[in-house]
Image (tube, rainbow, N blue to C red; front, side, top):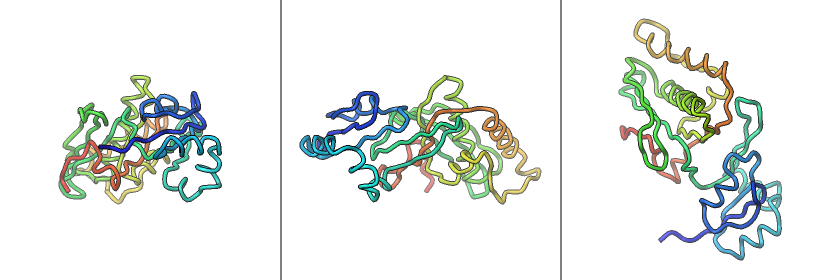
Length: 220
């Protein structure tokens, strides 16, 4: 049986102490600069709440903050931060499947909670794992943009996250007849990034602690 946790929200829609993750999420999801943390007991949570976020999450606790903190700016230029050791299930998880690298590529996006496939593409005749991950993230952002949704997007590729943030790819895959299909998709994805803004968080899936990402193709 999972050990009960208590969640302190120092900065959020309604600061306080919450006894379940869903209530904590309700106060912190899509709240810029939200500051919150889980504790093993009510007493520890109450003590932490009184002491303030600076002690438990800020300069007074940089080692712990480094493990969970991810600060960046979204494409819209607004700063955002997300600090949690928990999975945000109100999200889309993406992953790529390849047969060789380079080789045929396919990707998909799934509902993180249920695993239901929301979109998929491929196989694309020839590409790389990182290019497929990049396309999957942008596909998810474009999909959510059309819905007017600011759900989180999870990926297990740091390179693809970097490319999305920089709106540029860095790859050794040459442009030729065999790669024309994926390069057309890459060019379209880059065009979308340069012409749209979004508030969605694009976060690294914590494979070590959470297991394989929900969209995994199982081809390890």
